[in-house]
Image (cartoon, rainbow, N blue to C red; front, side, top):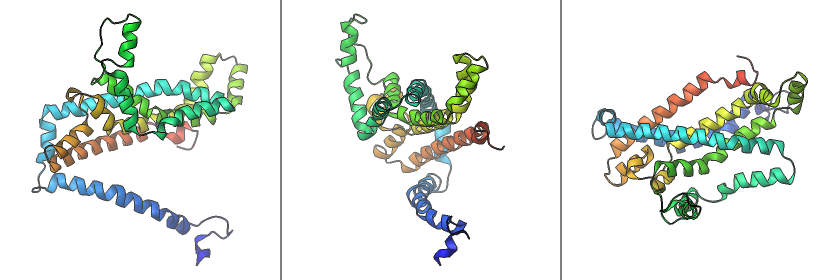
Length: 288
């Protein structure tokens, strides 16, 4: 019986063996993600009666469209800022060895040891009216009185970037680590300066890590809740906060489910667009 799950050489699993090992994973995906999502989306079109009125309400009301567009804009800003900050860190990690790379890696992974709530609360302390940042700005003479930093879009973007940047650093670092050092030496022998070597050698080979990190940060930002809820104002509301408001304050589950459906549609379309435009196998030199 066990032999059926192995190939004739006895060392590699057959398709049946691989399928059997994957069953717990697929069961987890179904019961923890697909089933709850489908059940929630069914509420948006079946309660209190079969209708698309909840989705029509999302499209017709400019307030909800504004919240959705703001969510996309903030997610894009966070992704771009994370990329700008993460690439130099990943580059330094890939060029370091020994205790130095261990120290940088610890600094990147250290935030994972504390909850998002704690990190967001720390930013609230820093950005408050009499917080460390305002006190510092007044001390060096940039401002004469406290500046409104908390409950702004800038506060949300900065705090979300701090929380999500490790998800950008690690894929880029993995891509940089896989580039042989001989490529840079070969480019130098051919007369390429460091800037051209980076543009024509490192950047194309790092693109899978950049795109993977960008997608991960962008899609995570779309559904972020804790940081916008604590650091943003009602004027800076994002779609996750709006969904929570509809459930907790108005008990409007069908409309909240419709918002979830719209967000799911956007995430699916964006993911498919990325997978269509950026072919990872081609960028890695594989077959088309």
